[in-house]
Image (cartoon, rainbow, N blue to C red; front, side, top):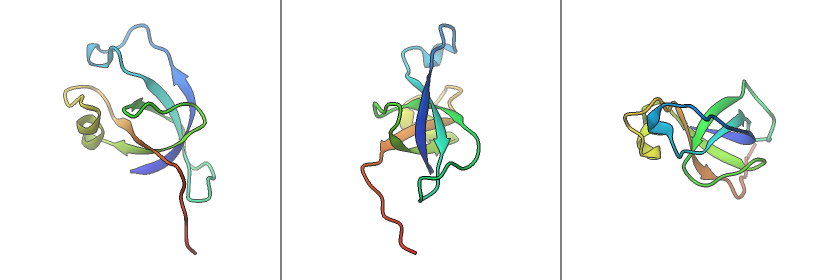
Length: 89
């Protein structure tokens, strides 16, 4: 899992049948200081998140399981919206 900021939406009129009706967002990974790290990724939204929110993202088979799309091409899923975080050190 990792933290990310939602930076955009994906509109896809044609997609895999398993993704029909799913909200797809663009996420930018961040560190504990809210600094951007790495490249943006596409993730399926399972919690009703929106642009500008800080979220928790799960990857791989865990993402498919938590999103309820075990037999789909999902590689990343938004599994939580962060209200606050505290980093010591």
